[in-house]
Amino acid sequence: MREMLARDIMTRSESSEAEFTQAAGTTLARIEQVLEDADLDFETPSDGIIEVEFDDGSKIIINRHGVAREIWVAARSGGFHFKPQDTGWVDTKSGEPLYDKLAALIAAQGGVMVRF
Image (cartoon, rainbow, N blue to C red; front, side, top):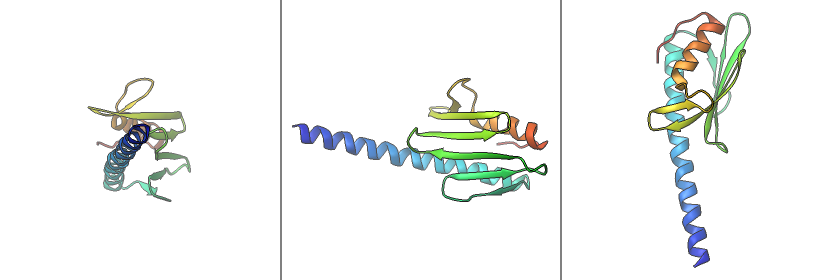
């Protein structure tokens, strides 16, 4: 019985990990497309990481954090963690949607207006 419960927990864990990876990947792909459309300079040094560089040399780094199952954003103004919810990714402290926060960070740090 214990083996069956452990196997069930592992299966659910692997399933939710796959769901997280897929949802985060879709979100990061959308972010990349918006950055490209805005002609912003960005790199994807590895899977799940986007580095946006601005003319002043500063960066915003967006990455998938698998252990926490969050998308993390590091900007000049601070670090932000976003958890998936029914309505999309929301800041774990303020509840602000990821795309709104990211657009505001890009405008403040890079002077570029983007729409997601």
